[in-house]
Length: 257
Image (cartoon, rainbow, N blue to C red):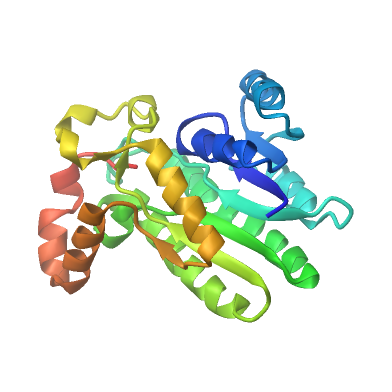
């Protein structure tokens, strides 16, 4: 996969994916908003994994800063073999009565940024005849848990369509759809993690391993763990009125990762 660009790379699942890629001797481009943390993580990876690490500070909700990432993905002299669209946005609010500006930033980070980065990466990769895109969706894509679920549903369907369009080009697209993952995401969004029982939680390392393995196989949809794959099957078969009643906003309280 050569050089990998990972968004949201300084914490949670993005950090775990970046470390696993570094340990597999892939050079990295790390994207995040906080320059101090970016430099710290990059130096740790250079020292302990012995790989080359670039850093790009960007707020993906800002179109001009997102364009910097797109330009790097299109750069022919420094090809990117794997794009990982991981950056998330913890809403932690209901839609009705919530801050609309916050909703718009979440949409920009979790939908627009995925589309713009994927467009830039796919175009460059198809020209070279090889490459891969890994988009982090969520189990919530199959639920009715508010706008977060809607964003992740878009990522899932977009990735499926992209994979179909890429067929035969040597480039693949994979959607990673984990359930609840211990990453610190929920705490940062002010979400009470105790509302979900321990057996529902997944380990970030295992999720990253499964996601990257799916990329290497060219698998389009990856749902780590048997229990979440079973839940997926049940949600697909259930009537939508039942899904709304059982896993809608009033049942979830907050948008989970």
